[in-house]
Length: 116
Image (cartoon, rainbow, N blue to C red):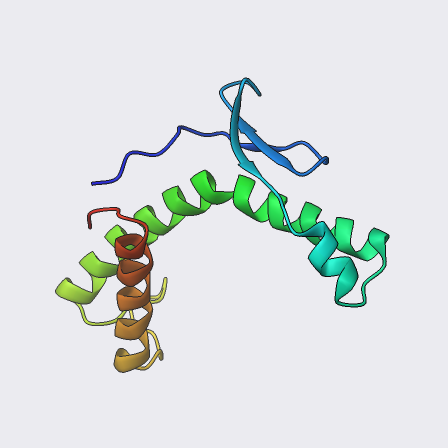
């Protein structure tokens, strides 16, 4: 199983993603020149880099949410096939679609090196 730097991670607005109370560099955004050369303004390129940094900084939270969702949804799939509504009736979700959502969570976790 992969070991990741513990969150929270923070995008600093200058192209860096930091962890450990901002003492550790997790990621440095690159490619500003490429974005500008592709026809974007410097402002547009910086906005893209900031958005990418924010997404990367959210990874610990997204990973935790995906782990929890996979665990719960996989248990529902094994027990009932599909979720139940709060009225105690099976939800109208297609079982194949529900199963594909659970499988997508598992695939995402495995691609990140996280055991399921």
